Amino acid sequence: MNSRVWDKQGVVGRILADIELPRMVQVRQNFDGRGLDQIAVKTRQEILKEECVHTIRVGMRIAVAVGSRGIANIAQITKQVIETLEELGAFPFIVPAMGSHGGATAQGQAEILESLGITELSMGVPIDSRMDVEKIDTLPDGRGVFISLAAAEADGIVIINRIKPHTAFRGPYESGLIKMMAIGLGKQSGAASCHAQGFKRMAENVPLFGLSILHHAPILFGVAILENSAHEVADVIGIPKESIEEVEPTLLDAARKNMARILLDEIDVLIIDEIGKNHSGDGMDPNVTGSYSTPYASGPPMVSRYVVLDASAETHGNALGVGRADFTTRRLFDKTDFDAMYPNSLTSKVPSVSKMPMVLNSDELAIKAAVMTCETDRYQDVRIVRIKSSSHVEDIQVSENLLEIIKENPRMEIVGRPEKMRFDSEGNLF
Image (cartoon, rainbow, N blue to C red; front, side):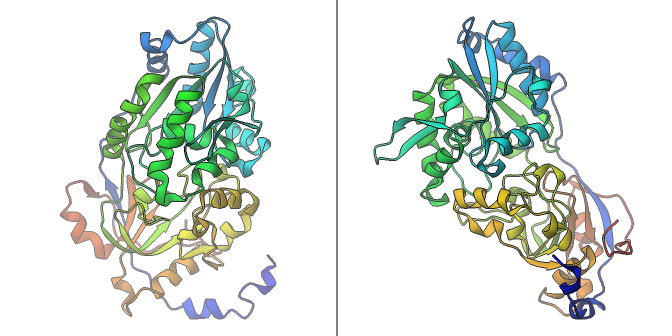
């Protein structure tokens, strides 16, 4: 976009020039952050459990399904799964199980895996990222159930995924093994089929499609990952095929209890430094930010204005989630790859997450615009919270008018003094 026609008369800058921002204070939120020390050792032990290891036969070609999320230590876990399968005499290869992500192309999905540290060189096995699918079942209502052709042709499939609450619906199976089978393993065709009735019926359709695949595809076992509040690996659990349906809901409950969140229920302006698919399928996790994109999931905090400043390098231009913001920056706009963002939004039937909010020339102007549009003429009373991303909410900044509330919360600790927001010569935050 040509800078000569961006606020060409300087009108927006003049309107916002005199907005005075509250001082901010560094605050630490305290969560249970216990992690797993020996991740590779635990991963190997779980695969070698009798109920999992007995599914492996010497000479089997096994598709190891890996998704697009920024899961803690996903490359290390995937590498250990592969090495253990090879130790047992199998021939594993990797299949990206990420629905329409990566622009719904084979190259795009391989590039996402590479950004996670998963390549043919680092893993020592082939990656088959073809988007071709095979229909393996037909539901009673006539809808087809699809999975990756590469996975369908294998002798067995191992699913690796994190269990966590979903960002757009509630049900016994949210983000996890069943959903990866229902949507991720089906590539764009499978994702579109499962999403066809929208999120209104997703709590019904995820198990409908996922369990169909569980019963009709050569699934061997799942490797479930639980994370702690700091998005570190808390546990790795091997689950045999016949136990996935029963065990996953209990792991979802555990994951919900482990999640970090913003421990303030009412916020006027929430500043998110960075969104991205590595932080959440929604760019910023609504379970943390309250920025739900559908009416089928809800929860705190209640936020009046969202400001999104940037998108992560790991998201490869896919700024999905920016549509939930009220204000963003030209920096984010300029790096947005609409070809990467739109297929995901179309497939999920949630166009709102791909809309562009009001775009300002700098962080300072975006934040001032959010403050100005709050329903008060006392800008020093506006309650502001700033987070690095929805993946990082242990250390946050809050406006000093929230300090009395924070002092009453034993899980929050004031660790700094009130200071003015500092901007560089371009108007961007330090």
